[in-house]
Length: 449
View (cartoon, rainbow, N blue to C red):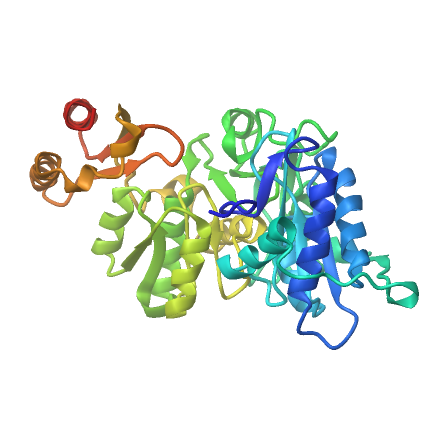
């Protein structure tokens, strides 16, 4: 993680941590770095979610882009994955999204996309950081005709809806679907896409006011949607996060269908149709063990990465795999887009329902979600990364793993920010794994205090 850039762009509380001044500098340095190889006036596409601070940051960012001699093209309120797509469609030199994803309204963020629609490499982010913090390179300040201008891409939302709806081979007529737009970036495009495909659409949290994004709604707060689906006798519910790069589903009984279950159901369909590259799905180490068991039983290979969609994408690109993602609903269909795409995820799930004639609860049932326990061991902060070197802890973990006979697992991870070691145990018996997690926490605290 860099000095400005985290795992998903630059984030912070708007106007104190992520200021207008910093947005200006990011626009200026980002435009310079991302367009430095071009031999024309660079064009950079800018989109945002519905946070009140988005207008302020957009103005500052665009001023920075123009001050470096690039043209800024505004896409307005639009999902993050739409920018990744539109950058490719219209051959922009780069894209920028102003969003803090699933975080509360007071936060905001700025993330860049390359001309190919991918999030930036660590090297490019570091170069931008060095220009801003160390003045490592001189960004030109053209005058007169050399100053950039601002235009608007009026068709941005329509273009994205057109693209997304064409990722399935039919319509969604006959399905009654509830969607929770999290008062975020999907509030226009998601209802539009589903209605275009003939679904009966009921929308909740689709009236953003700048401050209600993600507030007790969306993919991080499913309770309202779960209740709404059952009350209104819907066939399914879809919940997006603030920038709609992820989506989770709710079945007809109000039960969650998480990212693992979505990938299991869609991956199985793709395999059976010969569409799953090398019969492989890429997931993170946090995926539920039930996913591994489903994959093993159905001849699907599972590749695991560190937590974070950028690591999933890296592994997918390495092997040319076309399905991967996270339990949180951040799912990448690389045949369609270069980043996680909540709307495409939603459409793929709903099309699977329509095509198979099965209820969502039945589709989710292709994998059994095993109980999971998470406990924190409080340790000396200087020792939290040494747990693997402790023979007593290592032996205890090995013993535990052996008792599960492939139907349980132990995962230990140090916290990135606190003096904690997180103990995660999965297995079929909730009481048993809870007891074992508590025993392991006690041991780790004794050994690493």
